[in-house]
Amino acid sequence: MNADQIETLSPTAPHRPVDLAIVNADKEGYVKTYIVIPPTIYGLAKTRFVDAGIQNPHSMQLPSLIEAALDRGQAGMIGEGKNVWSSVEVHEREC
Image (cartoon, rainbow, N blue to C red; front, top):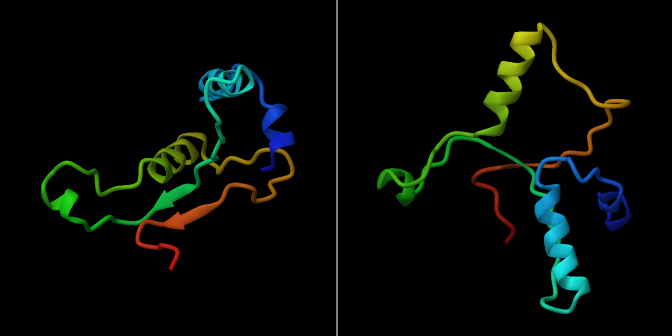
């Protein structure tokens, strides 16, 4: 998604009110900001934070998508179904 696409999001879209407040603060000169669209993160985390009980080791997004698909009896699709939602495995990192 590029900056022009982000501008077309409805003000009622999830997270959009926060985005708009951040963008307005930038436009008014309070801060320099960037909006980062998060990917779907999947996998079973195995970190010291999980071991300490302060990090959830499970994906939050994929189980919700699976549950919704099971409830509807089919997977969801938006528009033409082109993949525009990036994903990353929890243990991947840029070297």
